[in-house]
Image 1 (cartoon, one colour):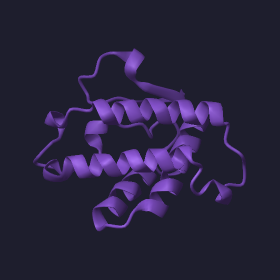
Image 2 (image 1 turned 120 degrees about the vertical axis):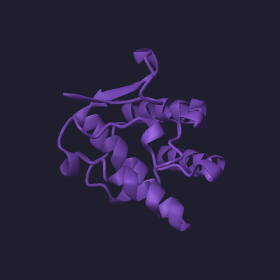
Image 3 (image 1 turned 90 degrees about the vertical axis):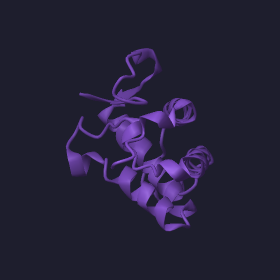
Length: 134
């Protein structure tokens, strides 16, 4: 099985999706959460990292941990600030923030590629897809 991350449910170009194996997804989510848990200061930032951590396959089951960027619990009115925080989390993961706590050494080539693709999804995400009622 594999996992896919898209911008939104109508994002029909698989060449722009982030797709990876279950093992790759586990590492990807781990490095994001390690970085984010060190960078989060405000309540909303902590909530965003908790939300990402809940997509670990031990919680949802293997192959069920992908999500669309629109699914992230964005606050429409604070979207740009929240996007900026997620981009800092991605950069922190690229700087190996928190990696010293892992019991293994992630394959940088794979992880950095995943982080770069995820960064592009975050940068290019149009907030018009945010569900303001959620």
